[in-house]
Structures are given as C-alpha cells and as structure tokens.
Image 1: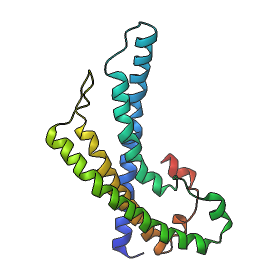
Image 2: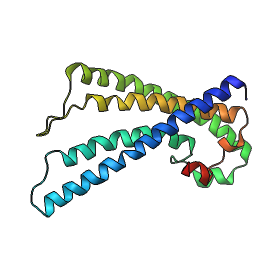
Image 3: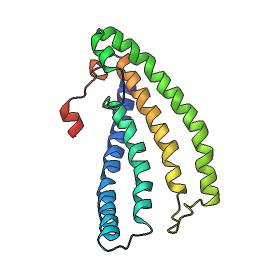
Length: 179
C-alpha cells in the first residue's frame, strides 16, 4: 500500500476507534439514568420528566458514532453464508464493489441530513417535551457519522484494493474487538 494511503487508513480507523469507545462510554450514562428512572417510577411513584428522554437522545449518537468502526470490524449485516462459500478472490471483488455503494449511500444521506441539521441549529430546535432540551446538537450526529462512515468505507476499499487479506476476512480478530 502506498504510504499516503496507509497513513489515511490508519488515521481514519484510529479516529473511528476512538469515537467508537466514546460512544460506548455513553452507556455509563444511559444505564444509571435508566436505573434511576425505573426506581423512581416504580418504587416511589415519582417518574422524572427527563430520564427516558435523555436515554433516548443518547442512544442516537451511540449507534451512529459506533457504526463506522463497526464497518472496519465487519460487524454489519452481510451474506455470511454466501461469502464463506466463495473463494477469497470473489470476496475481494464483492468488497471492491460494496464499498463504493456504501460511499454513494453515505453521500445521499449527507445530502439530506445536512440541511436538516443546519435548520435545527438555526431555529435552536428543542424536543418540545416537559423537559425540553435542545436537540439540534444531536441532529449533527447524523451528518458527522455519515461522513465518518464514508471515510471508513474508503479506507476499507483501499485496504482491499492494495491486497490486505485481513480486510476481506469476515470475522475480525478477537484482540481487535477488545482493543
């Protein structure tokens, strides 16, 4: 792999790994909030106005920011039964065709999500609930995650194009998942 491509692949994957870990850390907020909400609601008959909504608002960025690194780990849905039966050469061809489709899909999502995020920011959009937190910052998680997904997809394309067989393997090494 050319040095510039190798640097790009390492940088994008490292950024997405870091964001994946940050997104995973959101569960350290969501779980206690949900626990507090359940105890307050059922043990004391005093539900909060913010608990369920905060958990819901945090789940979006959790899933969106974890997706790009999950693409690197080959954790998204695919045709495992078919792909495992095919020789490595065909898997490589399918990967080289698949990644541009993902990038195109990301481009379409970005085209539609960016104006909505900008509109939410311009109007200072809130949730219109009793708690009424601002949600415009969370709407930016969509275009940001779409750009990160496209960048990771291009990195995966480069990995396959330049012959990294690890990029074609269906299951990531256990050490990489734990890292």
